Amino acid sequence: MKIIALGSNITFKNLSPIEIIEKTYQILKNYNITIIKKSNIYQSEAYPNKSDPLFYNSALSIETKLKPYELLENILKIEKLFGRERKGKNCPRTLDIDIISLDNLILDEKNLKIPHPNLHLRPFVILPIRDINVNWKHPVFLKTVGQIIEKFEPDELNKVKKIK
Image (cartoon, rainbow, N blue to C red; front, side, top):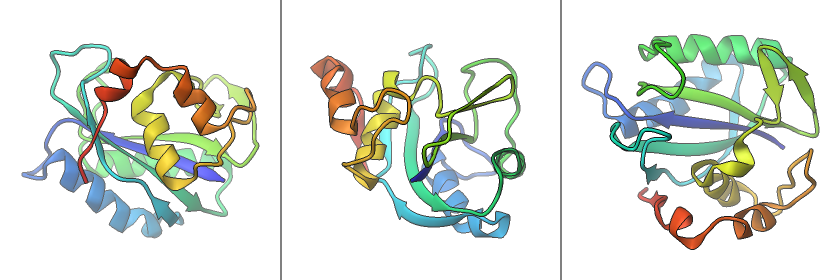
């Protein structure tokens, strides 16, 4: 299964973070990315700076014929359409799109790591993945979504709220 994750926590041209995510769904096809299944949209505290605006996250099961670096290139173009500026790691942003998994591909290069190296540490990524496939297995750790979720403390999971 090919999975990308979307996140947003600041507005762009009068679009709220939720509207940015929903507009992104609509334009992916223009970049050779077809949505197979969408997760719910979740709200969580910003990570790691909890004083930043709340984050909204979603995960998508996709189909694409793009090679990993072509997919990355298209994702960066989409982020730029929504005014993404890279001011620093984990800064507030209009749109963040991460490649989470591309089937069972394991890639560890300077500019691209697949599966996403921190996905198993982030409830705001794992809970949306559970929405799209409860049987998905991490290609490196070979653990199911449920097994990964079990490792989180209940209060960590409770901070991620399904909103849409």
